[in-house]
Length: 81
Image 1 (spheres, rainbow, N blue to C red):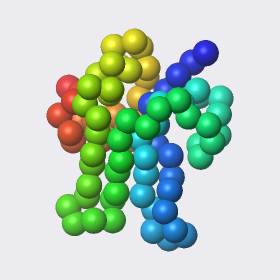
Image 2 (cartoon, one colour):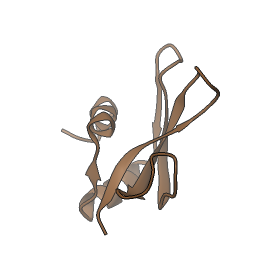
Image 3 (cartoon, rainbow, N blue to C red):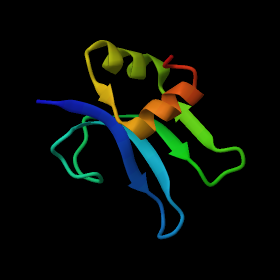
């Protein structure tokens, strides 16, 4: 089972916010996930990024690959170099 850390879209139409989740790469974008590890809201000023640091580090340590967009968020939160 290939697992990825990616964004799950939530919020009203035209007002997106996202959950950072760990999910099987075969499941749909807004479908089944394993664990919620954070939250991202690009519509606030400045944008809100909340991550469970211990869980993110755990999942990265067991080999979960973040998507490009999540990798950018992790760099902004200083969790990835």
